Length: 304
Image (cartoon, rainbow, N blue to C red; front, side):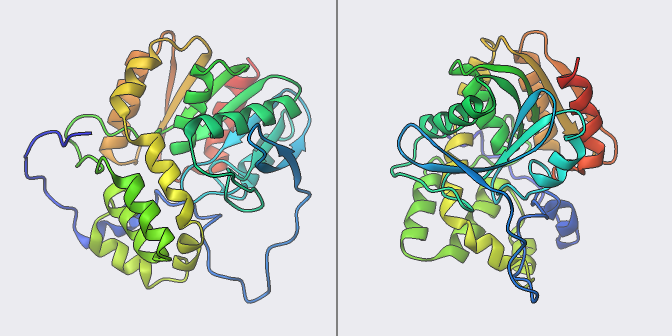
């Protein structure tokens, strides 16, 4: 998509690193543990339409809900994985899964958003044919796309879909997904993660340089091959906004009080487009939302 204008925007200082790194899913991106790999979980698999095997974990009892994570995420990420599932499992049957090509899930190439929608359809079938869905970040865009595609999603909750609308930050390059594919095919995983963070998420380059020196960077590199998928999901926010007017499922849009202004602005614009949407801003929260702050909102919405 074209860049919106030629304005010069002030760049955040390096002291803003902590604020920007709140966009990263802390429970997933980590250095290898000195105590060995994480405990093996009771993962099951379901076959998607194209033959990809989608791994998931099921917890709890009650009405079913599927959690959809964003970039750098697998089923362990706290904003849309096991930590959140454990905060919901007393009242809901929660499905958290590895999106295609991550964790224990496989991926048939080439990537297409429609194929990720098919993955979610397979999980809904396992959940009993229909379910509520919660999506975080680019996972929120995927959940929205799945609902617009007609999947049997009863209620839809979205936390900060990354829609760059307006001039609060620079737009991502229109060929970002292609650049990320090229870098990972060349085994330049660190460069791919850096490109996604700077041009896709908007993290200042000096902050990324500090992140690269930290123990979590190897986790970023490990999932770099999947970042082009997230770039594709977010590359045309105007189209998403226009199509959102046709959304018929009951929808809750959430954002954090301390999240980046462009993220909050995108949520506000999306809320204005969706008929009958519910809205909530979580005090003290940023993009990497705490499960204990998020769970009460989701329980109230899904159990209404």
